[in-house]
Length: 404
Ligand SMILES: [Zn+2]
Image (cartoon, rainbow, N blue to C red; front, side):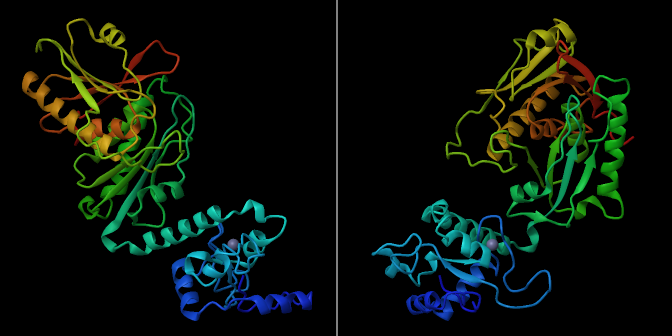
């Protein structure tokens, strides 16, 4: 450990002396680079404390300690005969830390809890984050929209910090996201008037965000984080409609964050397939089933819409709650869905209503509403799968007189 301005260790003079003697001076150039890489903040995971100023007294001073991951002396914390001398001044082995964390990682009682690999991880994580954030250019600005409504009485509160992390390298255009929030709405989906009240409210709030004062074309980019009942999400999607550049996110169950996962480079993989009826009879209704987070029960749908209904289904190759892991899978769904809409348009003409039954994560539900063309597509009746109920129940109609 090198302590450029430390006066606090006078307690045992002898100890301090021996420490001073063994301390390897870190070249100023290396110190400067470390400061720049760490943006002057403690690199201990979760600390991030500014080290150029005391936040309480606003006193400006160098409050940093340059900590060694592998001690400069072989006998020091995590030190050994070979690496200690070799890496004593190597920036890859140095961490900028606050005084508390310098002490914690090197203390006899705690040193075992901070192995080399972990501290390297802390350093990399912090420095990567700083680089990513400072790499951002102005055109990466995005309007952040959070949408939350209870599902079966369960409330959600979308964490804006997790949302901001997920959208990197895009960054929020404003300090606070725009929020359409029904988390304190007490009525259940099964209650009379629920869908009409909420869809009216969504429309009012949406217009407030996107039309008041500023023309919506001013928003180059929108990032949407949504949790709520499927029919409301499709309705939100139909409102988002023609905004050009929209990124949709979902909360992943396993990692509990909103970051899309990477997909292996097997782009040709067939993630979805569309099942069509043997013949399309345009005297009958048409239903679209979306089986992604689960399988829509075809029999229950037929019970609801009648035997003659033309049933189309887009199904994931392996439907399940964790299927929609990557942005690529969402994009491929959109492609498949838009193709299907085109097919149905030419079979049906533009007048017949459609029924929509969705078992899918929120971005898919939003895309199902978003892909509809107000002038070409008919009104779409969206059904909701109510927990405990025997199956799907009609909820609301979207794409109906959208401008009214
Ligand atoms: Zn710290």
